Length: 214
Ligand SMILES: C[S@@+](CC[C@H](N)C(=O)[O-])C[C@H]1O[C@@H](n2cnc3c(N)ncnc32)[C@H](O)[C@@H]1O
Image (cartoon, rainbow, N blue to C red; front, side, top):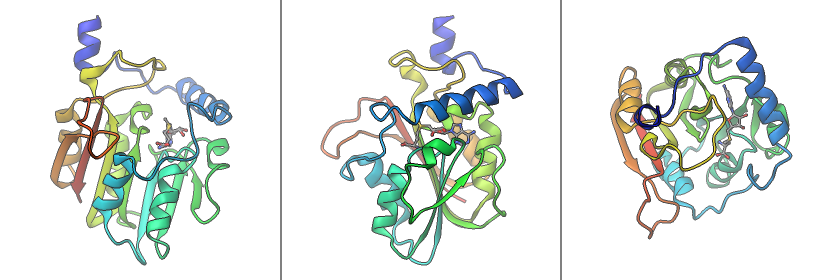
């Protein structure tokens, strides 16, 4: 079973109403845990730079952070792009309570986005798609709301490193090809590469960054 888990990022959980409630409750409670769910991030961390650099100038444009948590990435994106509308969206209202007031905060599920199709210039998800359970649907929703030509970034953990961290039973990590395949159903220029924390440090392989153009 461990080998299969390693190959597939874990046995797949089924998205029942009970599981949806459990995930929401878990993250509502976790919002108080600043150590494991921090509200800030060092802007020099390469995960942040990758998103800021991939999107470029977002002036008068609209970007969506799916599963934003406390909005630590969205805050920095807004600092770089004061004239952009940054929508910080999360399942857990308690997480959104920590997000900056100059972000547009929306409580919703990435499985059923309350946004019109083609209404964003950019969308990204950092360590949140791994909690979506129905990954195919979440990727479909993320791509649906992005305009043709808009950019998408996903940063998440690599299934090849499954077991390195303690995870809740619903969490999934992804093989590079798995998410590339899902993104390629809706996008072009789909790419995946390992991403390190710091620009001058070799990636250790735990995190992968997927990029795509709608
Ligand atoms: C590990 S945290 C990451 C938060 C943030 N992206 C960051 O990097 O700081 C995962 C977040 O995903 C959110 N989440 C989990 N399932 C979700 C869903 N179906 N829709 C929207 N958000 C979800 C959780 O509430 C939690 O805030």
